[in-house]
Image 1 (cartoon, rainbow over the protein chains, first blue to last red):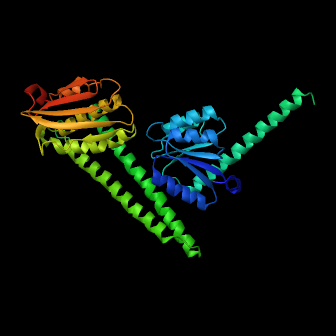
Image 2 (image 1 turned 45 degrees about the vertical axis):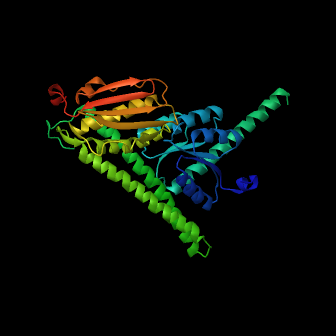
Image 3 (image 1 turned 180 degrees about the horizontal axis):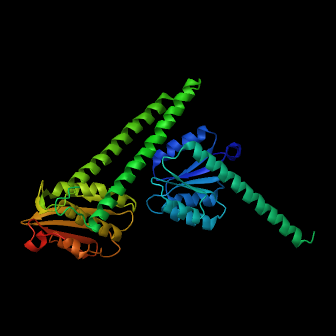
Length: 150
Length: 220
């Protein structure tokens, strides 16, 4: 995907799920709504992609072979603490939800997720990411001003 | 579940039924999530077509074909769950050991898949073997052996299962690439069938007498 398309899009989202057909369909539906979508079919692949790109939000399946959603969430946030991650699961439970939020997820939704609700959550993630980005730029400016005594 | 034995299932039995049911319903939920996304995408394409946008009939056909296929997969899981529900009798009976093994291997497939392990049941097995046992306990022992072998299996490997009848003994071997010897299922569970397990590097071998000794007949 061209950088220009990502900038023009509603948001740039990474969807992570081991189910290829689920990835294809949800990607197409989000693209129909103006989102730029990237996909990963495992936790490992997601971590690689996260390393090399700046996503506004990440939609992560909880149950995956190998590195599951919770483990991927922890590793991803260790590397990039400002990532906005929404966990999806077949069976939402309070226990899983609390654990996900405690680990730093933006939210936790049950599959099949209502796409309008997911879109709202992705936009919230983008807003939060931009806010954090602005904060860190502000801090960098303040630090520079302090350093040079301006 | 037929509660004929003494009208009460043990905690371990309930835990086992819960695990199997949770796994199967998770599998169904997953299929439904895919069906949901695909069918909603079809609706969106039809809405686009209604508003004058050109859509690919080939893509539409492909999507609907996949919905049909996923409905078939979900139905297969429901059928297996139904067969399982009807097989969980708590009374000692003459049960057909081969078909119950096939059922449990299919139902365990999702658990193995989470570790990227494939289960291969050898087709060179007796057509049918009559085992005098409580079906639920037999299923529990099979599940427990597969769980033990899976826990020891290398990720992304193959676990091969082979069933044979040797006179009055039913033998099931589970072999594969393992990080160490699998842990044998609890003795109190095996005792219910008068069964024994021999675990070694890369294998777990289960032996069940077709007609268990009197001490195993009373159950737990």
